Structure formats: structure tokens, C-alpha cells
Image 1: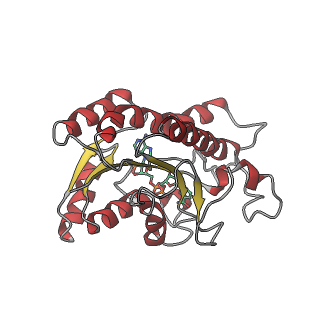
Image 2: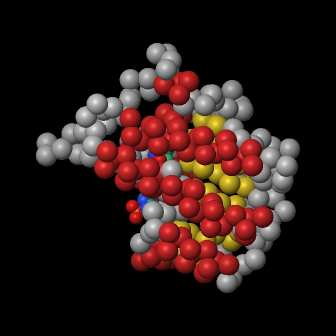
Length: 253
Ligand code: NAP
């Protein structure tokens, strides 16, 4: 039975990805920074008859927590086949009148960058470093980094891009940095069986978006596709089917 760790899987796209991979026969380590939320999520899946799931406490901003999760999972399995670096935050604040505070390049406080990068950039780096040994034991290791078409420098410089006017320097630059992390990681693993890709779920109705957007079912399907790709599949690429529906879904960095 193949194994997967999904960070931030107690809700949203991570939770639905857990459900879909369970349906595909995976054993799922359901990562949650709050263990009780993770346990509740795992119970919900078990109640649906999807029993090969266990909650694991993992806060991607906390190295002790990441290392403890590695120790816990390593005590149960020798091999991790798939890592989905899903946990992410926007860092967007809401003002006293309930409006989103724009993340402008001129005014945004540096502390907002630090918080968002700690989760969206250093988080995947911490988790990947901790779990790379278990992943190397897999015959077909896969790493999927949850990115966004909004992290594409090329698209965000193109006035015809659908979200051209939806700027936000902190979140968008965090995903751009994650994209470059993905390129470097894929390069370092180029002569191995690893497939490492950055994938955007598209605009999706979760807590992250105030429940606006498309379905989590479609979003998770887009993500798990890259957890399941064969040895002839791509590596070191950025995909967003919402932005490029040509069948490949590949978009420029
Ligand atoms: P969500 O419903 O808000 O879920 C985010 C998950 O990340 C939650 O489980 C959250 O845990 C977890 N998380 C946050 N900080 C964490 C930390 N330090 N350690 C561990 N877990 C942490 O959002 P979502 O829409 O499913 O987003 C999932 C990913 O998709 C994110 O990387 C996001 O950037 C990306 N994405 C989403 C959209 C969209 O339209 N929804 C579009 C493009 C990309 P708590 O429950 O404890 O807060």
C-alpha cells in the first residue's frame, strides 16, 4: 500500500486530497497543526469507510513539530511514496470594517512577509528536508507543492492574465519563491525516480477564499494527479488547469 503525507489536511483542499487518495488505495498520514482537528478529520473519513488514515500533528513553521512527525511516521513505515506540501496561508488581514487589507509592496509590514514565508516557503523546505530519506526509499517518489498561477512572474506581468489586477505582494511572492524551490529540488533529483512539481488547484471555495471559488473536489483532483503520475510524467514544472485548460495544464513560471 502506498503512503502519503499531506500537510494542512484537516480541512480544505488538503482534506479532500486525503479523501481522494484514500479512495485510490493509499495509506494517508493526515497532517494537522492542531492534533484534535486532525483527529476529527480522520474520524470523518473513517466514518465514510476510508479507514487507512491517521492524523499526525505537524506545524510546518515549527522544526521540532516537523521532526517529531518524521519520527512518528518513520516508526510506522520505512517508505513515504508521496509528500504533498499543502499547508499555506495568505496572510491577508481583515480591517475593522470587514474589508481585506491589500498587501501592497510599499506599505506592507515586513512581519507579514516573515509569517507567510515561514509557512508557504520555509514550511515545504522544512518538511521536505525532514522526509526526504523516507521518500528516497520509494520506487516512485512524488512531491507536490501547492502553488498558484498567481505565483507566476510571467502571468502577473501580462495584462491579459485573468488575475492581473489581483496583486498582493506577500502571498504572490511566497508562491513565486516556492516555485523556484520546486525548480531547484527537481533539478537536484533529476537523475532519480522522483517527480517534483508545483501545482495550482485554481480558485477554490475554502476558508482561504471565504468559501468563494470552484469545488474542492475538482481542486483536489488537479493536485492528486501529480501524486499519481507515472515514470514518464513531468518533473520540475508548474501546472494550473484553471489557467491553461489545454490538457497539459502547464503554465510559465
Ligand atoms: P484552507 O482551507 O485555509 O486550509 C489550509 C490548511 O493549511 C489548513 O489545514 C491549515 O490549518 C493549514 N496550515 C496553515 N498554517 C499551517 C502551519 N503552520 N502548519 C501546518 N498546517 C498549516 O486553504 P486551502 O484553500 O485548502 O489551501 C491549501 C493550499 O492551496 C494552500 O497552500 C494555498 O495557498 C493553496 N491555494 C489555494 C487556492 C484557493 O483558491 N483556495 C488557490 C491557489 C492555491 P488550520 O486549520 O490549523 O488553520
